[in-house]
Length: 331
Length: 120
Image 1 (cartoon, rainbow over the protein chains, first blue to last red):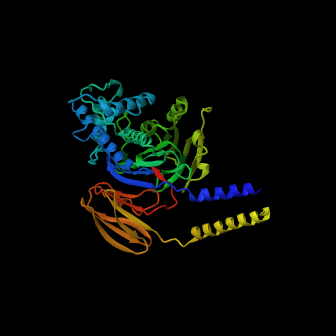
Image 2 (image 1 turned 30 degrees about the horizontal axis):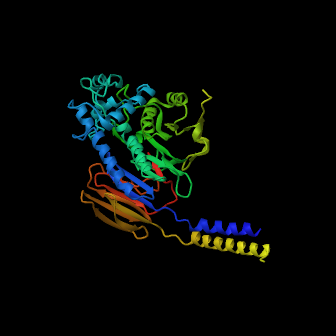
Image 3 (image 1 turned 45 degrees about the vertical axis):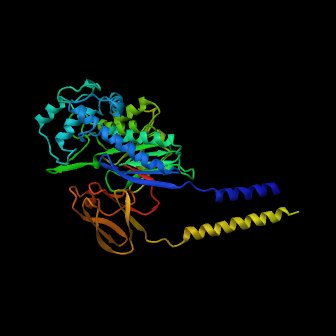
């Protein structure tokens, strides 16, 4: 009995004396958004992470005249380095989603004014003309078909989050969290051992619709609410369907993807938003493990894939009864 | 030879003491809260949300006018092109107020009991 008591005292002492690793955080502005990084332990890794993100931005930006992508779009160079790597990842996602993600949709995004903020509704002939230039199947990393242009923006932040996590792991960081303009990646668990809680934005309000508990996972949301404009009472959002040339109108208000591969999550959130619930659910079923999804329909219904059943919870104006679970064994 | 009973008393005492102290920590009166204003990642001002006031922040890239009222905070005017910061309204726990062109971020200090990060 005495030994047990002594052990108990020792444990009490341990629990209260072990120092918690110190939290370090930084904010930076890159890739047209605000980014928050936080790590526990090694502070120096923050500066090198920021450097890495800026380097990637200078390679991947479609608008920076010195970037690799800009040079490729303006026929002055083939793609190499990270830009080529990101392109090949994006092409994989294009094939997986039947072209719902397509990096060659860029001429249409430009025509709608979403890169500059000079919004306009292109007429039907203009859209039809530009659609002829769209098609990832025609791409190689070496040359672009006449009139075609690419934009890696739909996967760039996810790719950056993967690279930053890679760096953190190399430097021995075991616990950290980043939000690259709403592209979240959670490395490890919190210092206390709890999983990270990541909120999911409600597409219909400023609040949250729920949250998901994760470790070693990206959480990425795409939705029409992120960027849009109105003309003559009609709302046009920034996610252009590569098949129609118009903002995607698939019945979904937002799609959130959760999984260890940040690039995949980023690309799929856009692609699934374009595809709509049924086609996206089919793709998820046939993919096998690797990612999970949260769909919010225009009718404010929430669909989650079965892997999130225990880690997702609703909040705010939503109720548990609004949530349906998509399972692999079902139609 | 110390008896088992004595040990039980000692351990219970330690347990009770820690319970009292944790209650003291959890139940101490909380301040109405503060918000922090960052420009380009640097903390430039901590705002006490108890004091209603209006002030301007010169970010070097432009000026934002901030209103604090009844424990809340928002941007009411800005000379940035898109004015997203003004349109985002009062600061909520779900996402900070951001003025990208001016590299300005307004967020609540420390934890508000919300999630660790927000996707979207």
